[in-house]
Image (cartoon, rainbow over all chains, first blue to last red; front, top):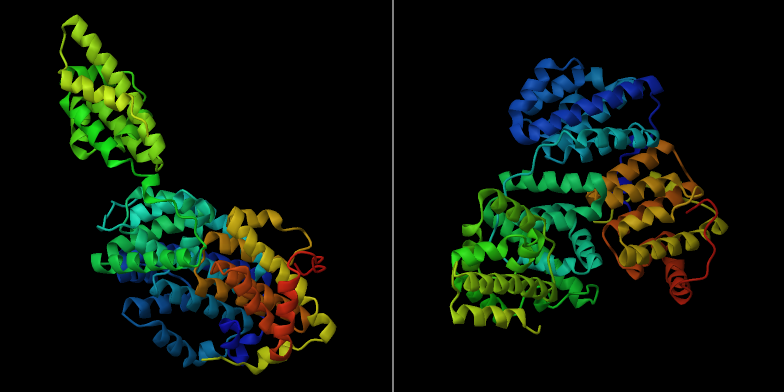
Length: 371
Length: 146
C-alpha cells in the first residue's frame, strides 16, 4: 500500500482549490525556495538567514528565520499550526503554507534542490509538471564545476568498470541501490566511475548524481563512504547471486600480468631519444589505451619525455578513455611496440641513438604478442 | 507497521468488473519491467502512447531521472490527491503509482506483479497472480488505463 496515501490525515485529502493566478505565484515562490536550497546546501544556515532578510512573503520569511535559528522542521510546522492566522488560512494561503513547508522540509533534509522543486510543484497540480522540468533544465547550465576527486581505497571502481561491460547490469545495480546510496558510494570513486553511472538517468538525473557526489564528498567521512561502498557491493553481490547480472570476468578488462610486465620493461629499457621519436605521431588515444597495460613506472617514463602540451593532451585522452577489454589493451600495446621498434631500428641505423639488444627483444616480444 | 486510512479504503471501492481492468494494467507493468531490464529505463518512454494515463507518463520520467523513492512516492501521491479521483480511476492511479515505485526499485516482473495484485484483495490476489504468470504475453492493453 502506498504509505504516502495511507499515512495522509483525513483533512489533507482535500484537493487544493487555489486559483490559477495564485498557483502561478506559488510556482515562482517554489523556484525561489529551490534557489535558496542550492545556496544553503553549500553554505548551511547562513544562507537561510541571508534569504530571510530579503524575503517578502511572510510565511517563507518566518520559516527561514526559524530554520536559520536552528529549529527542526517539526518545530517549524508546529509553530505555524499553533498560529491562528495560518491555521484558519483561505485555500490560497493554505496552499502557500503547504508549498513553503514542503520546501523547508526538503531544504533542512539537504535534499537535492531539483527534488525539492519536484515535491513543491506537485502541490500545485499535475499541470505544473512540464513547467517544473523546463525550470530545472534552465538551471542545469548554471551548475558549478565538478568537485575534486576523493578516492577511497577499495574495489568499487573496478566493480563499476566490470559492470559497465554490460550497461544493463550497471544500470540495474545503480537503480536497485537507489540514487542516494549510489551517490554516496560514487563519492569515493574517480570521475571515470561517475561518468559511467550518469548516462542512465537522463540529463536531469545525471546532473543530480554529479551534484550529490560533490555534496557528499564534503559531508561524509572516509568511513561513511567506505560503508556506502560496502553496501553498494552487497547489492551487486545479491543481484549476481540471483542471476540478474551479466558480470564480465575481471580478466576481461585487465591485461594479462605477463603482457603488462613485458610492455613495462620494454618501455623502461628504451633510450629517451628513441622513446621520444617513437611516440611522435602516435595517436594519443592509442597511447592512452596502451598505457592501461603498463605499470606506473612506464607511465612516468612516457610522460617524462613528452612536451608539456603533449603531456596534457595525453592526460586528457586517458581521462576520456573508456574502460577497455584486455584484447583492446593488448592491441594498442602491440601497435605502440611496433612504432617504438621501428624508431629504435631507424635510430640505430642513423647512429643518432642506440637500443640495447635486450630492449629490441622486449619490443619484438610485445609486438608479436598473441593474446 | 501497516498503515490504514478510512478515506483511502473508501476511495478504493469500485465494482468487480472495473477491478478486472487491473489485469492488463499489471501485465503492462510486467512488460515495462522486462523492457527496462533488456533495453534500459530510458527506452520506456518510447513505449508510451497518447491513450496512456498522464500519471504514468510523468511518473516514468521521474523514475528514469532516478528520483529517490520517498520523493517519488510523495510527488505521485500528491498529484493523485490533487486530482480528487475516487472509485476505479482512483484504484487505477494507485496501481500505476505502485507499479512505478516497483519499477524505480528495479523489481523483477514477478515481484512487481505480487505487489500489484494486492489491490485485488486477499481473496482474489492468488488466483489473478496465477493467471498473470500463466499467460504472460497475450492480453490487449487496458483502454485508457495504460
